[in-house]
Image (cartoon, rainbow, N blue to C red):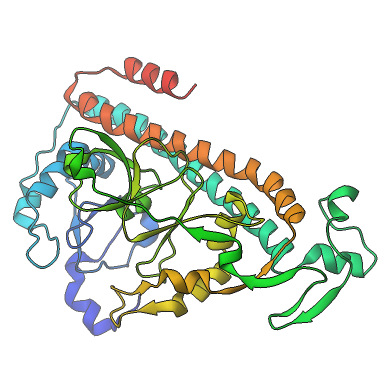
Length: 384
């Protein structure tokens, strides 16, 4: 964002040069980053504290310590939540920062940095896989490229003769505009249904639940394992073939294709679990719900006036009009998309494994309880 120079001049103390450690102290507290030199001259929002490391301490080390489970726990325990979560700067200054010898700090930082790079690469790969699946869905079911190609006497790209034969070579006019000839018009209730099933985990306080929550989605789209006694309100059960869509603030799209659905899987009541119906499949439902055009349409179905508390009516989703492709075309898409989505799920699982190992090993490395060769062996054995 941009602000007037005279306003920014009042905050020259927090103007960045590069190499500062940044930490959020309001709202989602405890998020940490090291400012790169490319941000020299930029400033920060008031919700971000700027830490200037002493010359003999690398900013990466301070950032690593602040991200450690101990620091995150201490930040959470000292947060003020009267209005919104806030960390007092006095409490931030009091956080302990262990200082092993410089050489050890360097090798530990390099080890954790390499782990972070692997996690980042997995997430970037998933963004690419997601984009390919979305491009395929748009080509077949939004732009109708195979039909247009056949109309022009061309062979549809990326498919053999048997697959191309599933598409007609002409369009017809409907209330939704032109659609492939023979394809039906209906609403989304013809392609999916809303799963309903309220669960009170508190009645099974010692049972382990797989909890799909909004914070878990935002943290990497992996559910957390919690005992029923720690889950304070009713949830919705999650069936194996579900796709979860957040009904809260649809201008921030949250569409979740679970990597795995275990026993006692539940989700926040802010999620709508949709399952395939009619000719549909899980891959098709996910691609449809994750499509940018759907996100725009969903934003028109909100209730509530506050931007931070808008919700979608479930019945409004199912009544949205749409094109209903033949079952053979959906099955063919499912075959093509499932390979991409299977890789995406596996990468997400591996990223979660690496993140958990990093957070588990970090305090032991910092304290000297674990040596680097042992840490390397643990990482390799967990990711084979």
